[in-house]
Image (tube, rainbow, N blue to C red; front, side):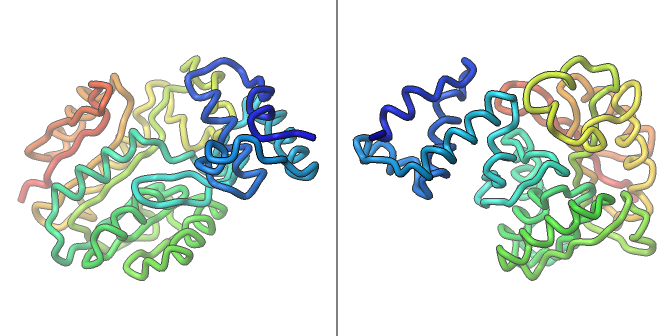
Length: 276
């Protein structure tokens, strides 16, 4: 006979700041309950089926597989999103893009584009917060497009549209008041690619050439053709790339170029306004 408290004690996940949280999330999923249930009923008996499911989850987590992929879901902003191994796992750092976008434009009608949407996290968060906005989300990976569309439909966000497009390739003639993106920005030689959760995420969504700036350069170069006058381009980038991205924006003719810091004090997003 196994109880909740003993299963958690025996989880034996690799030591990390999230080890206890990981174990609780996995056990709650195996039980089909919330994390609060675990703390409210620590002496509840666990069925053999749930214990076996938990054991399988633990094996996968000990092998390094991210909890989000094991559970197939991840919270982002105010949304619960389906996630899968062909897209990046939405991260709290990226919520800075959502926060900045909501501050930048009023709640009146506007057209917004999310490039490389993955699970749809940024686009759907914005569509949820701003019903008057028309948000277009694009990705070149068919599985990502299908995933973002499933998330859109489940959340009932009719002011969002998901399209297949390699950056701007399917958007000829379309212009937006805001273009936003969390593109690949890791250098191909970065040792972090062989560490942690990143090992399980798609390289195509992470790596952007020798210096990590290939996709950022392309987006910045092509964005002016798709922005309304005085429209904004907002980009997430690596913690040490802010200066380079600001220089690229300025060289392309953007004004009011600046960067914003995340909770860790790193400049993680840069933006600029298209000069008239």
